[in-house]
Amino acid sequence: MKHNLYFLIGPSASGKTTLLEKVKQQLNIKDILSCTTRKPREGEINGKDFYFISKAEFLQKEKQGDFFYRLEAFDNYYSYEFPKVFNQDYIVIGYGDKIQTYKEHLAGKVNLVFIFTMPPSQEELLERLQQRYKNDQTKIRQRLEAVKYEMQFKDGCDYTIVTKDEEQTFEKFKKIFNKNKI
Image (cartoon, rainbow, N blue to C red; front, side, top):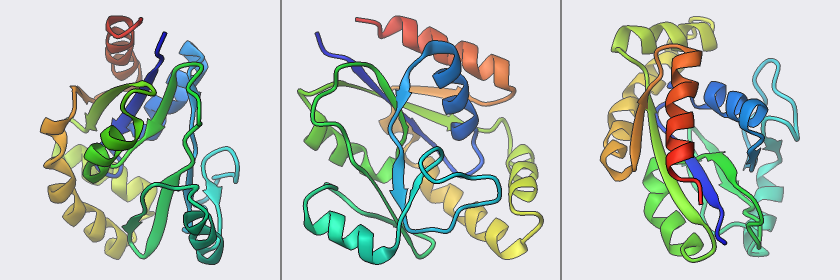
């Protein structure tokens, strides 16, 4: 029996992390943490939110074959160390421009389910970004510019969830989860 690997894909502040946390708590689906070279945001914990590592450590892991791709965003590197065997369902925050890479490297090992998350409006997105980045206009502008690029991956996903509120978003995920149970 193959298990499912759910990828949450979408622009910054689209509700991916909020949904991931709720899914982990309510549905007992394990997440796979991303390794990143960026500094932790306020409240983030190494080993809980990400594995925060130096660029030298990242490059060493990459050289050893621990990663099958590298994403570079805002001068930082990101990747995953996926399990060798998928013995349960997992959920991850993925990257739209890596959908094909995920398919190439994980096909046959696990069923892949791609879910695009997006806020209900540009205004809501801006509000979320302002809360996250404490009105740092440079970071907010960078993220808003990236949205145009990230939105192009919506059609490559199996499902889209508009993240209006936490409960409604979770209920939509549960429907997808139940539809894809094996």
